[in-house]
Length: 111
Image (cartoon, rainbow, N blue to C red; front, side, top):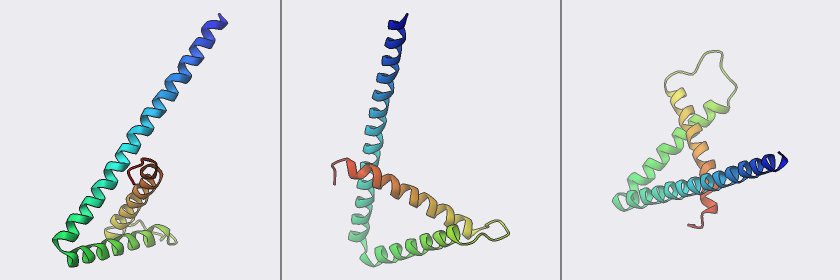
């Protein structure tokens, strides 16, 4: 009876460990692919038009700065509407993506 419980416990542990290893490998691969795509996009944009690349980076920076301001400022009494909601959501997505890249792409060895 005890041997079965021990075997079942070991089996569950091994299944969980292998599952976590596979998940880590998949997330690391996705992070490397995302980082590669971002670098390729920056390279292609710069080779097409450096001025438009700088202008686009400036506009993206303003968009994210407005989203950060909307996210971290003292909350207003009314709900966010229009541009404020879009920029706050964009900032949140960008922040989560940056954390994803920070934790997974730095471990992949592609850097």
